[in-house]
Amino acid sequence: MQGWRPFGVAVVGAALVGVLLVSSGSAGPRPTHVDGDIAALQTAAGKATDAGERSLLQTKLGDVQRERNEELNGRAADTTPNNAAAKAKIDAQATAAAAADHPLPHLPWLPAGDGFIVEGSVPLVSKDISVRNNWFREEPGNTQRAVYAGALAADPSQGVLVVGIEGADGPSGKAVGKVLTPERHGALRVTGATASVLTVVATDGTSYQFDVDAMSLR
Amino acid sequence: MVTKNSGGFRTIRRLSIVIALSLIAIEAAFLGNVRLTSANPAITHSRYVGWTGSIPLSSPQNFTDMGCARASAGEIGAFVLAFGAPYYQSGVGYETVLPGTLSTYMTLYDIQIRAQNFAYGYYSCAPAGAFASIIISTSNSGSYLTSGHGSQWSTMVSNVQNWITSPPSYGSKVAAYAGFDAEPGFNSYSSSASWLQNYSSSYTRRVYDVGSADGCPESWSGSGTWTTGQTSTAGACQNGWNQDNVSYIAWGNPAAWPFPEIYTNSTAGTTPLSSQAIQWQRITNYRLLHYGSAMQIGGILTQQGACIDNQGTVNQCASGTTNSPTDGYNQLWTALNYLDAGAVAQTPNWLSDISWKQ
Image (cartoon, rainbow over all chains, first blue to last red; front, side, top):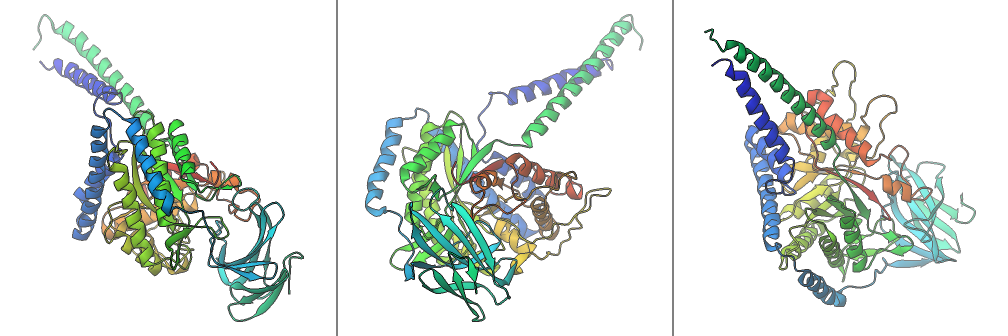
C-alpha cells in the first residue's frame, strides 16, 4: 500500500491545483471590496496580546464587516438594475440641490492698491512655503497676478513672496518668481498696497515694500 | 512485501513522483506569477477638485462625468477627491478652500452633492464587477482646522453613504469614505488630532489618511540584511510631531486607515526604496513594536499626473517627488516586505495617482 502514497499525493496535489485554478476563475461568489481588509484584521486581532490594541482591531473589523454587508445588500437589491430609477434618484437630488447650491464665491477680498488682499493660509501644493495671505490683481485675459506671502516651511524665520499668474490654464498658470527677504525676520504678510507696490510686514514687525512689476523687495 | 505486481507499482510510483513534482513546479510557478502581479494593483485616477482646463470644476454634472469616465475606463479601486483645506465663514458654515485656487471655497453641502454625482456617474457607467471607493478628502492645512469642521465632515460623508444606499441603491458598485490629507508640515498635531477625534466621535465611515509623514525617521541600512533600527520608542518628525502622532492619525484612531503619499523618487542605481516608503514602513513597524500590532496600509497615493499638469507653475511639484504609480507602489511594497526581515509584510490593495485635470 505504501506505493500508493505518492500517487495519493499527486491526486491531492492535482485537486489543490484544480481548486486554485477554479478559484482564480469566475466560480464562487465575487469578492467584496473589503475582503482583503477583513482577512488582514482577523489575522491581526488573533495575534494581538494587548487588550487595547485588540479592542482597536475589533472596532476596525466591525467597520469593514458592516461595509461588506452594505455591498452585498446592494448587490441583492441590484439583481435587475433599473437605470430609470437610478437616474430619477440623481435627478431628484439635482432638483433639491438647486435651491441650496450656489456658484462658487470668493473669500472676503480687501481692496488694496491695484488689487485685493485675501486673508487666510490658502495652501499651495508645494510644501516648501507656508502662506499667510496673498494679494492679487486682475489682468487682461481673465487672469490674475498673485503674490503669496509667508515663510519657508523648513525655516519659518525666512520670509518669502511667491508670484504667479493664475487663471489662464488650470490652477496656477505660470510661475513668475520667488523672492526671499534679505534677513530672517519671520513670515511675511501683505498689509497694504499703493498701486502695485505692496507693504509686507514680517512677524517681528520689520516692514518691506515689494514692487510687483519690478519684482524688487526693499 | 514483494509481489508479482511490484514492478508495476514501482512504475506507478515513479510516474506518481514525476506527476507530483510537476504539479508542485506548476503550482509554484502559478503562485509566483500571482505574487508578481498582485504587487501592483490596478491604477485609479484621483483628482484635486479645483479646475478642469481653465474652467472651475464646479458643477455637479462635472462630477457625474468624471465618475462615468473612470467607470467607462474600467477603473476599479479608490478615488480620492481632494477638496482642499478646511474653512469656515460666519453665516455660511463649514467649507473648504479649493486646492490651487486663490480664494474659491465650497460648502460641505456642495461637496456632498458633488460626491453623490460622482457616485451616480460611476454607478451608471460601471461594468459588471466594478466597484469604486470614493474618498472625500480635506486636509489639515490652514487655520480653520477645527473640531466643528471634523464633526461636520463626518456627518457629510455619512450623508453621502446613506444617499448611496437609499433605494434604489447604488451600493453594489460604490461606497463613500472620508479622506484626511494630514501632513506634519501643514499644522500642529494637537489641531490635527482634535479634528480627527471629532470626526470619529460618532462616525459611520472610515477616514483614510492620504497624507505624509514629513520629517519622520527614514534611515536604513542596506548592508547585509535590510534593517532600519526602528525601536518601540517614537522617533521625531517635522513640526513637533513624532511617529506615534502620525500613527494615531493613520491607524490608532478607530476610524483611521493609512493611504500614504509615496511621492519621493528612489535614489537611482541603488534600491527600489524611497524616503517616504521607508518612513511609512518604520511607522508601521513602530506600531508593531510599541502596540503589538502593525498598521494595515489601505492604499498608496502618487502625484505623477499633478506634476505633469503643473510643470512651470507656482504649484509645481518639488523636485524628486514625481513617482509614477508603479514606482510608488513598488517602493512601499518592497519596504514593507523586505525591510526588517519583513516584520510588517503586507500587500496594500489600492493604488491611485492624483492630478489636476484628468
